[in-house]
Amino acid sequence: MLTNEQLDYIMDVVNSNDNLIEHDYKGKENQVLISKELADKIITFTKSIKDEKVDLKESVKLIIRKVFNLCSTDLVLFKKGNIFIKLFAEDTKKVIDEKDKGTIAQRYNGIDEEDLESFHDEFFENEAHKNFFPAIAQEFIEIYFNQQGITNSVYEKNVFGYIQNITFEHLVSMYDNSDGFFTGFAGYIFRIHFNEVFEYIADIMLEKISIGSSSMIKFLEYYSAGVIVTDGHKYQVPTIKTEDGLRWSVVSMLSIAKIYSKTTKSIITLEKKITEGKTVISELYIDALSPIEYQANFIKSRGEIENEIEVIKRELDKHLDVLALEKDVEKKKILKKDIENIKNELSNLREEKQELSTKVIGAGIIKQYTELQKDIDLLKRQLQRAKQIIVQNKESYLSMRDSLVKALISKREKLT
Image (tube, rainbow, N blue to C red; front, side, top):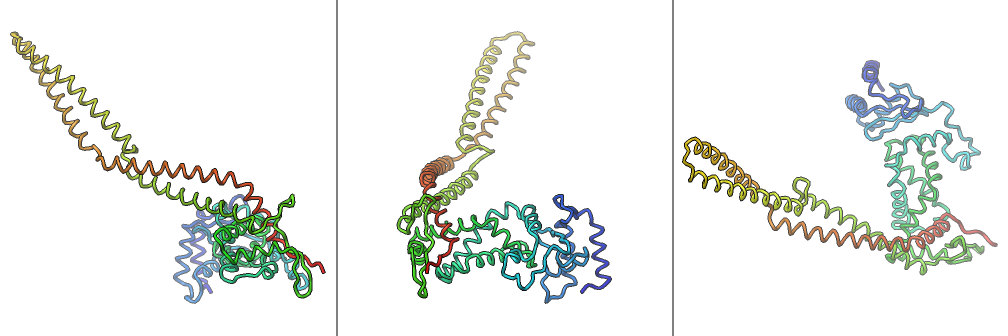
């Protein structure tokens, strides 16, 4: 708990640094962004007074709530060193009656969908979105398939809840926040990115069967069972099939999955090798020129200097010949002066040539560059072929994956 003196101090810090606070952040009256500079000052102050038993960020949030006189429904987040505040009206979070728990009324933990949409559009940035859902899918497969060996029955009953929980945990980690807001927000983004999440899950499953995962093959074989009997009741099992009725079995999926998965991995490896090769080659560049370009410029410059030296030497010889025959004292004096200037010019050119010679690059560097460039050119051709294979198989793969997604989000239907 802050003393009055401590509260007055930190309020003075905030008030005197109002220029470091962006009110109406992104044009919204209910959003405030505290810059990293001011956030650091608040964190430093918090460190000096906080109870060691209380998490630092939680202590900072408590101070922010006190200083800005926030309601319990308002949101405080840490994002890239800044502190973000989103203000919610007191009645924004609806109270869920006991009778409505577990129903659609509790879908977003009682938070108004408009507020969730606003937060998603304004703060759930593309950069964060890029790897967010692949990570959700990967963790889901790791926990429930690799570690727990989930059955089809348990999967059908719990898959949506499992994914929403993982989504919530990722959001908490991402924004350093565990407020109830994210319970609702996890449900919201799972709903609007529903298909996307299952596409990533299907990708991983297909990759698993392509490398012969017996547990994943067994799991997917379930969708070819047709009708099963459980506890004396018949159930129609979801089927992996296209809109036009083409059915996929694990066997029929394997060949395309293998080609697509292997080629996709190959593309990633090739692109990495090309990037690494370019990095090594860039270290051989001189004055923004490749060794070959630099060498060509060197040879050209040296040739130009050598040609100029030859021209001046001939001019010097002519002057010396004239001087040897000249009888007039004044003319000889002028000739000697000209010869001296020519000799100086010749000397300068020879020095320039000598200096240029110190900049010559070794044959070893040229050879290294040439070999690296050949390797990269080969990798680029391999990459082009791999991308062509993906193009040739993409339509079949996506049809197969879409069919799998439909099965994965479906449940068995009771017949009798």
